[in-house]
Length: 186
Length: 186
DNA sequence: GTCTATACCTTGATAGAC
DNA sequence: GTCTATCAAGGTATAGAC
Image 1 (cartoon, rainbow over the protein chains, first blue to last red):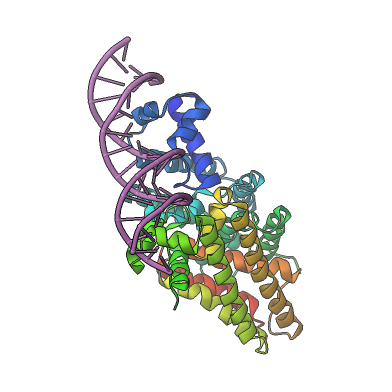
Image 2: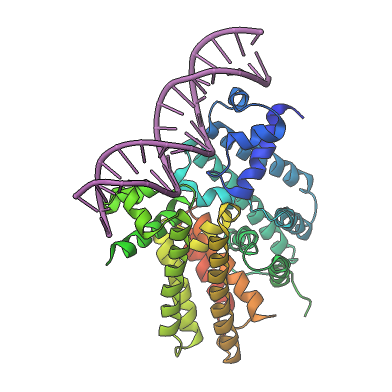
């Protein structure tokens, strides 16, 4: 892994653990054994690093989407849930949620990139929800896009909320949503 | 309103707009016409101000809970939704969500106070959900506490997410949840 | 690409006068 | 209670040598 990638991955983790405004170049330099000035060689400004982190996240997500594109909708839902299960296991939060709370403090470049990321997530989830309903795997009322917003909201906030209540709550929330969505044979 | 209250209210707004680590004493001093040193008279440290903000939020919520305690469950649900509608109108986020993303950077006093606040919210919502189901106003499966977690998650994240997608999405999410919950006469 | 050195700014916080 | 003055710490960022 290149130093550039190392920096991005560490920054990603720090943002999701502490928030964008609380992590510093020094923390990165300290861990990967490189001086703060050297980080500026790879990323001239903190905003450049911020956008790179979001880009990295979008690439990973795109790969995941591609890798399950021929799988049934319920498998896609599982994959989607797994993203947040992993996040929650580390007591972190998701990138979108972390950056959304700091939105007003971000540079326009970072803001726009973040909107791209949320757009990608929303499009994917909307698509496999619609697909699952058509194939009678899922059941829900209204627009697929609205249902996607509801489900994404749930995951996004669950990882935040279970920092305050109980780690076990995450699983309960997840199972409750799944149960509501999966069509019961009555 | 006392200077102390002025400071708390402004800090509350700043946390929900920019995040805990991005707001500074200077911003407060600038707005309410008092020097930063004077703020330290009221709140020796930033953590003291942080806990005071959460306390203030808990007091307001307790008053709201008390004011609707004899009302039917669906009115309570409306009141609960209205809290987030107001937040969303200002493009802000809720205090719990904002502080949850910064959780690891907060002093223990602030962390504990925040857990108290989330406990209060969760207890109230669980209670009126259980009550509403018993009176056959609401319908849902499983524990009231789990359903409360799901609904709180939705509101908490909606105000964050609609910063990135579309302001109108908030209302759609809200209506979708309400429709799912309110018992249909079939 | 990475280093040293350093500039420059913003913060939270304190001391002491009024 | 509020002020002025001041501090130490920590942050991003740049210049220039290697």
